[in-house]
Amino acid sequence: MIDIALPLRLRIDSAALVSNWRWLAARSGAACGAAIKADGYGLGARKVMGHLAAAGCRDFFVATWTEAASLMPLAGDVSLSVLHGVGDSDMVAARTLPARPVLNSLEQVARWRAGGEGRPCDVMIDTGMNRLGLRIEEALGGALEGLDIETLLSHLASADEDSEQNARQLAAFRSLRDRIPARRYSLANSAGICLGADYAFDLTRPGLALYGGVPNDVARGAIRQVGFPEARVLQVRGVPAGETVGYGATWTAPRDSRIAVANMGYADGYLRCQAGSGGASWQARALPLVGRVSMDLTAFDASEADGLAEGDWIALDYDLPNVAARSGLSQYELLTGLGARFERVWS
Image 1 (tube, rainbow, N blue to C red):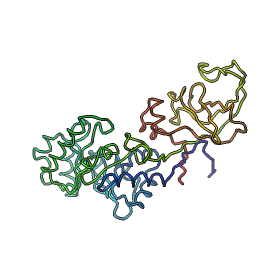
Image 2: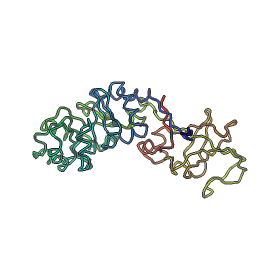
Image 3: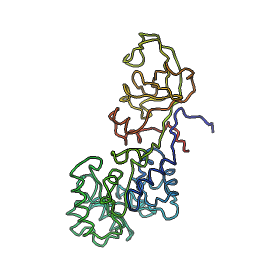
């Protein structure tokens, strides 16, 4: 097999990942799990699980049974839950794999009663998100009687905002804790952890903040960047003053300029909305993005970066909260959108 180097890489700081989890765990004051769906938010779920398990994390959450299967075999006493529950086509996997479904509807509850062979499950209750989860009246109407519920969950809809909805959901979930028996109760995601100890219950489920996302001001300064995308320069070319760069001729060189064309574009998850605000750096020298982002090429102004040449690596400006603010993308999109042409390089 020919070994071909990828033109893009995502450097991943495992120490920052663990540091973020430890900060979230300390702030939780409860058991602290980890959402590793979407392939660990794009970083690589198996690696994320390995580093966090070694640091003491025992509870992990994925979206689908395909994601669960990709993590087998599980190590030691690690617990894995599948957030999307169990459909008809999932039952073989759900009975075979050492993972629990998070039941989200009366149909899923009935399916698990009929085919789950009495195994434990988790249950999601909707306290105001109106996404997945049994309605409160369904949960209290006898649908859950006799189930072996490991964790009763709900999900905050507005935890990253100063919203009255947070207190309403907290009150609703407290009421459910008193009326539905389960071994553990779990409400808080990353932003929910930052709302305070009242939201922690027995288990928290951070996602975004593990990977360097900052859900609110409480976490600012404590959460460290984890992923650092880099692109290889395909060509450095001179552009005389007055000439334009890229589709639509949206950028005109104000002077004789040097342009670095990187082997990267919107097919890699570096989207067109980065134009006008995006940038990179090389040896601490700024490289503003110029022109439009195209499918797999992006141009940067390297006029102030003497010595930059074909084959050099440039570091993208990718501080998640700052890039989200200027691009209009969410921090989640910025993380999970980085494509397969980025080689994941752990350190």
